[in-house]
Length: 238
Image (cartoon, rainbow, N blue to C red; front, side, top):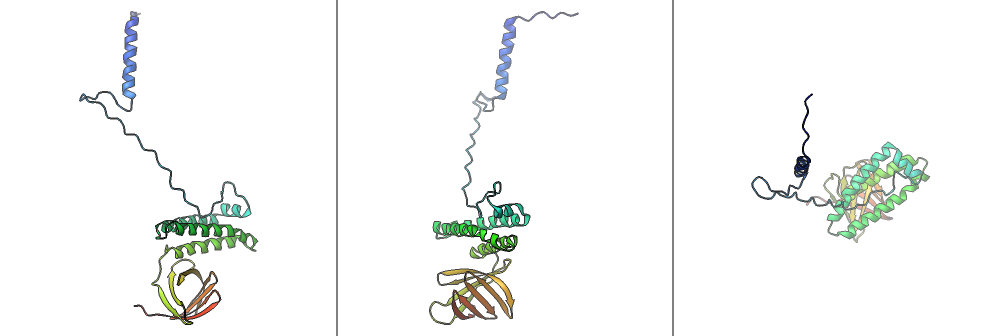
């Protein structure tokens, strides 16, 4: 049997120190030692910390991991209502983006947030309905189309300018949006309402919402504006 002569302790120590140094240089990611050109190795640039996204308000603020009542449980467990909830979140975020870009700035955004909180708070009224599931679905759909029309998020037809009798500020600008259901945005002076199509009538359609009813037949229209009756006719395009 071949016998290997013992290696002197000093040699072992030297090899150990050399090997540790080589391993350390090879594993050091910053590379601060001299490079092959005699210069110093470049330091890896520190990655700036990722800033958290700007917090945004959700269309509804309840937690589906901990539903607080029967309504939240229904909204969180029904696939159809979940899809509507996701759709509403998307449309509400788009509306918030428009509100931030609005010339009114923060007041416009704050108003939208208040409207949305009020809408979410009123959802519980559906639990008093004979069919709360259908009520919740309809309420979500109407809110989605209301936001789409109110913030111009859906395709629209050319606005119609109506001149209404009765004197005073009776010019009404109507814009019709291709939503489901169809919506109309009426602007009268500084007031604006979003109406949903209720039914088709001879030569036109009837829209209603926010205590306003709007029925069009050809160029003529009748408007019940919060108790005030107006007879209107659309004006030719300029």
